[in-house]
Image (tube, rainbow, N blue to C red):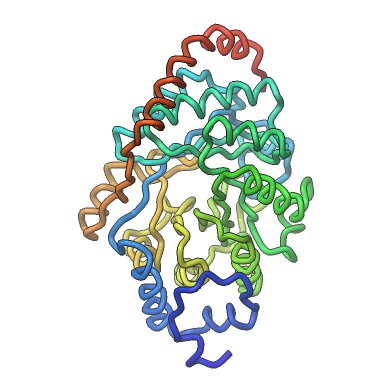
Amino acid sequence: MTATAANTPTDAARHDWTLDEINALFALPFNDLLFRAQQVHRAHFDANAVQISTLLSIKTGACPEDCKYCPQSGHYNTQLEKEKLLEVEKVVEQAKAAKEAGASRFCMGAAWRSPRDKDLVLVEEMVRQVKALGLETCMTLGMVDSDQASRLATAGLDYYNHNLDTSPDYYGEIITTRTFGDRLDTLATVREAGMKVCSGGILGMGEDAQDRSALLQQLARLSPHPESVPINMLVKVPGTPLENVEDLDPIEFIRAIAVARIMMPQSHVRLSAGREQMSESTQALAFLAGANSIFYGDTLLTTGNPQAEIDRALFDKLGLHPERRETCEDDATHAQRLAQQAEQHARAERVAELAVDASV
């Protein structure tokens, strides 16, 4: 691919990016890369609007997977206290607080390989009640089959998060308890159930530049592209196998944000984990490179995240504002929501009984 071709903006959503083309984007002069990313970004989004999400861990620790970056894995001693599945009422309280703080999407994560049926009943109720607040809903529960995905979609779940994490070739260096193909299968199942997809990866896990290109290639091959693409910087947690891995150069991280924006022009690219370790300048460059989504709040599942007040101050300094989500309802949707709220009272006793049985 020539330098001229690499500098030619395109608005088309492509699924056939070659590694040579992606490597050519990464190799562009930094200013040229950011300029192209800005062109693509402005063709599809308000360049100064950032979608705000809040993430809550609804079940923490004792995960049977061996992801080398994860403090929730039961394979490593990270001093993390395991917790049972949260009560529905506590989740709703947190969702209300998130909405008041400016979030438009509420994301809930559970440290499972895959959910059990009795736990899924409670999760469905969480989705219904959070949805009734006027928030978008997102879940990350591990692998789900077609029946589970259908149940979540019927409950009203908007997004399902399932990250690819890294390239197919490097994947085995990070995770051995589920395959890269398992992750692709889960994403296909979620899409078939009618939910939107949230899928991205983690940078700085010791991968090389080719792995970063291959990760983005795999994400862009998904059809349609994931509506949300979280790009995480590794948070090195003591006790995990990656606690001493070499830091990734922040400029290389920004390049990945820009390339993701160019390759998936209509997706929200989320500046996700690792923001607590980033300077204001690095975050500002990420927004310039096309990032237009963040997590608001004190923690991301179990790792730190800039507090909302700090984020508001940065937004003011950069002239950014939360993305405004249209929440108007037609008569049919309004009636359906009221009916769902009425049904919640009828289910309350059953949910309380199941909550007692929910286990680690």
